[in-house]
Length: 272
Image 1 (cartoon, helix red, strand yellow):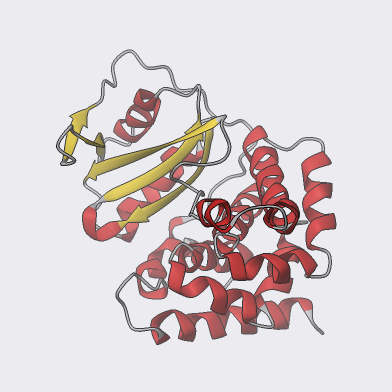
Image 2 (image 1 turned 180 degrees about the horizontal axis):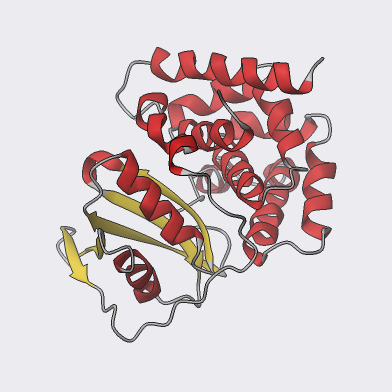
């Protein structure tokens, strides 16, 4: 049995893969469903929906379709102005709104080279949001869906975490955080799980990736205070997550089959 959080979480992970983004936007059920999720009462659903939309907006071909989707811009603007939202949700809503509303206007007066630079992926790396930064972590113990769920819960509770995505095969997590949040706070939150530990992935002067240990002793972690309770273990959508996500290099229909399921769920839920 699928629920809203399960659908949007797995849809977000599908959208994190560039080869899936245009197919998701072109599907008749997914984009309208995401718009309706922007009015959801669950902050986790809202946050995952905004992450999904930000991923989808990385494809320049998706911008106009997303911007013209009925209710998209209005819902984003309403979410930006809604009281009681965490700053992480508000900031991400503003960013998605900015990308969708500014793309066409800026390209009209830009050179092809400027447009090329503009179209580079910015969700996690080199974000246009100067108040945010991206950190790549190597997470020891990240061996499966259960450990991933533990890591997600730890990161979601850190105030200042905007979004994140996993590379399970490499045991890595790329986290987008507010510029004033110390990287050590992430390591501290992850170490608090007692089953995971994190090191930062950086490149040395030769361009080689190295792992940098992070201190977890003196870092204070400020927690989000508005997150709802997490799903019980037996209801967690992370149980089947790895089978649902299309990864780079995987066959194209891996994401497509689940996308059909998600679209069917959205259709049954919102169109009656």
